[in-house]
Length: 214
Image 1 (cartoon, rainbow, N blue to C red):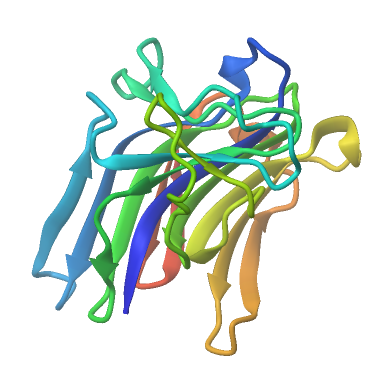
Image 2 (cartoon, helix red, strand yellow):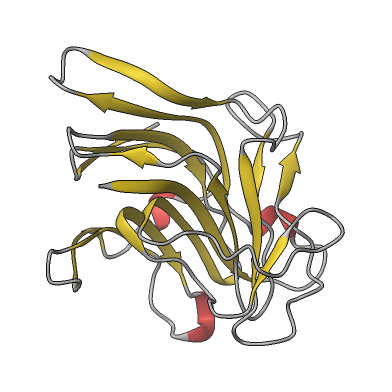
């Protein structure tokens, strides 16, 4: 079994609302077999984006010329961090160029910042269940995916803030794809407002998840 590490946000954000996007830094992917004998197989400090495919989702139309995911030199633990950008229709995403075998276990750790005050501002990170769509390259090095507006995961973290769109508070949820290809998960916080506007550390371990909020 193999998967690709994925990080994505979607934002109900007009031009210039870069701060509303999710920022992530110091990502690590580890394989544990046995758990006490792991080795780090992927490490990222976001000095550049050479390890990632940059994808602009456009299934809703109108996003094909949106800014690509980029580095934010002002935020991070420490800076820089990843800012995927996003628009009022669909999010953007980044996928590792490497794939990872999780047959013997997989650990993913990352820090994520989700801002409040915007509609449809999502921070979604995890192990994707699909390969990135690289059929529509742009001159700036990004790829336009006309078939998706958001990602799907083998296992992932969903920090979702729809804002005033549906008047529900932001939620924090772990999702997993079951053997019959349906989704399942666990809602950690139906109102995750207290975890917005600050950095939190997340860990997906052997398809289970823990949170350590700082």
